[in-house]
Image (cartoon, rainbow, N blue to C red):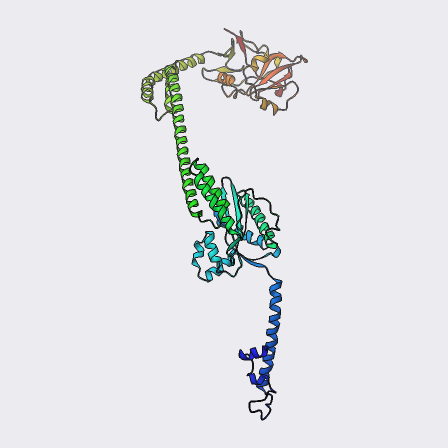
Length: 525
């Protein structure tokens, strides 16, 4: 029979060549078998018949060996989630790969779905994000089932919903939902959980799969869609009554919950989404108005605080006492601190104009007095140490005061000679009197010094305020004191003005390195 079918199909020799022993209509003579090309055609026909038989036997067994469902995966829909295009593509690709694990489904990834639909000139795919639209397009694919998914943000959490739709029966096989965070890592974990549930469902029956509870009592779309539609309509009527009262946030939460509970085959989805968008816009406007009100309130409070501080500063400047220079400085500081939006600005500037001439006169008078004092001081041969009754000779022994500076060379001598070197009325200062001319070092500076056990260290004369003001910043002498060493009477203390070191030297050692200079002092007046 197969050979006859092959011959009739034109794949082999004529029918009369397939029966070489058949008698013709005249039955007068026996037909001869075909020769040459006819015999070759018979052989080809026989091989073709064998091949058809083999394919016919193999196809049923192949179909029985691979009874898996072909699943087309559409791109995930994202609702109010801010993710980049690359992140969205990674999540969709990850879901397709997770569905293919274990071989339960033959998965047609989103890339192949796009390619097939575009090859069929289905341009609407580019604008197809609704689930109904995706189901219509899915019927054009060589697939048995369709996977549609939505990730919706609800408050600070997200819900991942994945449905498996049977294209032949036009019903939803199963719907799986998982709540998670809205970061990419949390969404990957949720997709992994949802696809695992789908693989469990595909490996058996819905009754055999022991799935964890979803956290609500919402019916799941299945082959019995009547129950799902009844529950949906009941929820819709309840929603319509409940949103008549309540705050905007409460209404928005109810609408979002309704869409999350009934994400597929929902004829009210468009209207609900429109209400959600309107409520979200209302909340955004309210939030913007609240933010502007808070900014206005904060600006008003800052303005009041500034006005309060400005008034206090004005009163302080107004109550300032002292010289004209001090009052002028107070008013000038007030104007510098509050140059704008200052109701007291005109008064302050008028005060400044009136005080400036007086301050200039005071400054000139003080300068003249200081000059006279310095001229008088220059004529004396000694200078008073501030805060004490000590008067020091301006120049060391060996130098002469010219009225403006010391001339000559200071004489260096032993301690025994220094005790008798001062003129009448003057004496050799004690160690403490010499040290009082120098400033003390800070604690940190003292810690950096490695000192002998009984030496002391101070600032140099050029860096000490009192010493430099009395003798100038050029005094770098090494001076004897009248104080002997407590444990060695053959030595006496000396003070280095150039290094700030207080040490002791032998009294009668006349070597050059042990000689010191002499600066004399008297007790006043």
